[in-house]
Length: 107
Image (cartoon, rainbow, N blue to C red; front, side):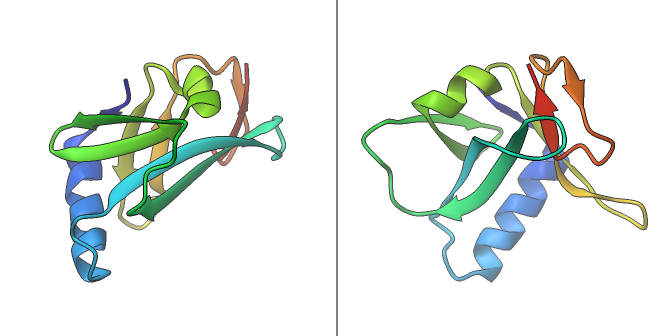
């Protein structure tokens, strides 16, 4: 399961409404790359795939493919705004190491 903080929920709902796709969901995933070996992916989507797992937390639907799910179990999706904000942030208890920008990790 992936948890969604209140700040991430507010931002996700605002972005989905602004896009004209209020029924879309957040698709998160992991791919190879970045300075630590694995990179997070986050997109808005409207179509489920055969190998997807779907969760809902705090009123937001999150979809993850089965391969990425293994890396993301227990992760919290947060949103950091303001002058020094980074946008959506993954707080992943499985990550042994993360890069300075927080966009890549290793297990």
